[in-house]
Amino acid sequence: MDTLHIIPNEVYYEQFIQYFTIKEIANLIMTSKVLKSIFDTNNIWKMLHFKTTPLKILSDSVHIGPTYSRSIKRIDSTNEIMLLSKFNRIASYIKKENLYNGWPTIEATHRLRIDTGISIINIKDFIPTPVISYDEPPKGWEFVNLKSESDDNCFPFQQVDNIYKKPGCISKSNSVLSLFTWSVRSNISINPSKFCIIEQSLSIQKEYSDYLASLGHVKCSCANHYDITTLSNTGLKINYKSFKKMTLKKLHTQSKKNIKPSEKKMNKKDIQIQKAKQILEKLESEKKSLIEQNKKCITTTSKLKEAIELL
Image (cartoon, rainbow, N blue to C red; front, side, top):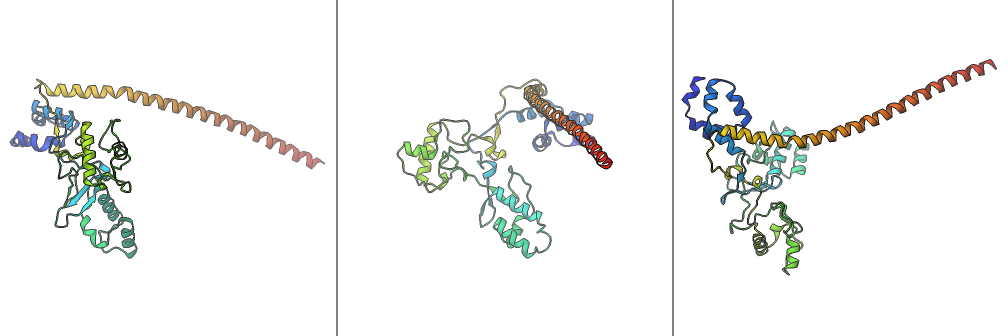
């Protein structure tokens, strides 16, 4: 354990801490005195405290869109672009059908082409199987920056944004009009046959972006729609004497806030359980009645049989 002291503290700060949760750090601190001396410092807790603060979108943050519409580009001369969800679906299909080991059957090849739209020749492009994640691209691919290359202020419309709804990246804003409604009110002609906003002409997209900018929306406001490595913490203007204490206080407050919602859920479950018990009691009562009725039928049948035999 003493050899851990040989590693410079900067290595822990820059390479390790970003992958550790507060709970994991707490476990390390309780493991040994050496690990406690390394990880139970004010600098470490300051970095952990930053993790509890909101992520900030910077001017150069890379917008990769919602998880269901993130696109990736192949890092080669083809520059092929594909939805990450489709890539993961194809790779999962290949793994499920065990197409990596040996040449697949004609039936499997046919199903692959029908279900995913790729031929068996392309299987090598999906090796190794990716980690089914939406926060990092597969090996050999990179995220596509969906922000307009021609205008930094152009709103990053998604492939799923349609002309009849406000863009998905605008959250909690009831004042925003859809492209279709905005065009009607502004007496601007659009192509109604083009369902997606990004299928409209660049001039229409620019005018709609200017309209959104007039309402204060110049770029996506959803932090989880960006490459997390290009975001930043809001940081702190105060250097606390004990960041550990402040971090634990914040966690305590968050945990305290979760008590009432969990109690409400428990009360709902109690009501459901009570209703289920009432239904069960009713069913048991009905069963008892059926049992008594069945006994009476058996007794009556037996007596009738005896009476018939005596005749």
